[in-house]
Image 1 (cartoon, each protein chain N blue to C red):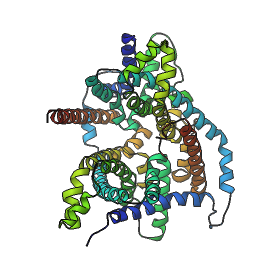
Image 2: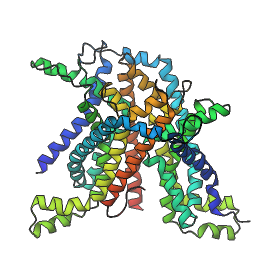
Image 3: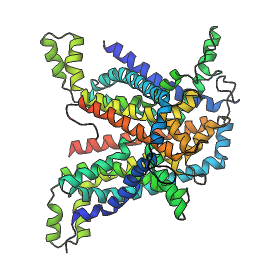
Image 4: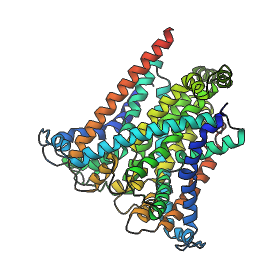
Amino acid sequence: MKKLGKLYLVLVLLFLYVPIFVLIVFSFNETKSRSVFSGFTLEWYKRLFHNRIIISSLINTILIAVAASIISTVLGTLAAIGINSMKKVPKAVVMNVTNMPIINPEIVTGVSLMLLFVFFAARMNLEFGFVTLLIAHITFDVPYVILNVMPKFKQMNPHLYEAAQDLGCGPFKAFRKVVLPEIMPGVISGFLMSFTYSLDDFVVSYFTSGSTSQTLPITIYSMTRRKVSPEINALSTLIFIAVVIVLIVKNVIESRAAKKSGLS
Amino acid sequence: MKIKLKFFSAPYLVWMIVFIVIPLLMIAFFAFTTEDGGFTLKYISDVGQYANIFVRSIWLSLIATAICLVIAYPVAFILSRMEKHKQGTMLMIVMLPMWMNFLLRTYAWMTLLGNNGIINNLLGMIGLGPYKLINTSAAVVLGMVYNYLPFMILPLYSVMEKIDKSLFEAAEDLGCSGVQTLFRVIVPLSMPGITSGITMVFVPAISTFIISRMLGGGSNLLIGDLIEMQFLGNAYNPHLGAAISFVLMVIILVIMTVMNQFDPDDQVLI
């Protein structure tokens, strides 16, 4: 039984990994063939680094992900603090609306924002591009921050903030000294989550980007639509390596933290 | 002066109204109005012309969801019964492919399934094929299963991990066979994981337009393709697009309400 279970797990892992490994192998292929391996080359990596569109959309993606996740973290953390002290009914209403971008299919979020931006573009001087992308990303990021921060309040004494103010802290000092340290783990995981969602997002960006400001997933999409070049395989390989490194680092940090808290 | 905490949420509330509530209302508004702003049911009834695409989308994503459940259930169970220190690493290995951009994951299957792709090449070596693998509805289902399988494994695992091992022993002591233990103990206890797994696979599957476009060719249009075509394609018609999106949201709402009926704890969102 045990062996059967292991075999099954191996089969599922093969299903998950074989396509990615094939992609990686063919990034080193001499010809453009996607099925016959004819010889080793690093040509596609060289071309990748000289591909201006890819480099500029990569920079754009990182800029948007950094900006969107920082703004969402501030906005979402403040929101969570406020929502937490709301009365039951308004709290439920706000939380239900906050859940909307998470429950709704991405395409609906994308086209709904597109409708709004088209409306503004026609009446004000709004162009599709960096600004619309940033707004869209913040919109789907903030709910994740809120959902990560909210549970932290359950573990916190609700009167601490008032007590700090009674003892002479200004409201902002009280917030910084009392509330913030308590909710910090939630804030950090909310930030990381929104950063990864922003990096990875295609659908919402696709509807809100216009033609001037592209993100890496949009560039990847247009690459798969055009004549396919193994550059895309090279890019996949680099992304895969980056993901593996990040996940290993994350695991090491977490297991160290677990050991530390286990010791103390 | 004390500042009330609830005012901290003011900036977000403004943001939420402008960028979540109003855009969704605009979808409803566009779905029910003509170009000059008058009320109409024309576009909603026009959606009926695409009934075949709706049926196909629901059907293919139901199949994909069912396959995901069948594949993921044993995976989650095996993971949850591993030694504790192995679980974290194993879970990371299972979830890792999900961190690759899903366009690249779908592209990987494009190269595998292509008419001159590796699978047909390997089959050719033993004298079979070539078969038409890409641009079929089976390829679309495969793409859905491949992309969304981790979404099924994760919620199932997190529920099963909490099931006490001694319950299985108790069931066995009381004379349950393996199959009985599965259906009388494990399945009922993992119900919240099943329902949230189903929603997490079904919603993106029914609304995708990438998977159908990359693996289904032009002949396997899904609801997502239809919406995309109304907004960014040649068929530009935001009113019809909004109407289709509106119907899609209603379908998903109905399905999630049905799913909630099966969930004892009401844990699923909404």
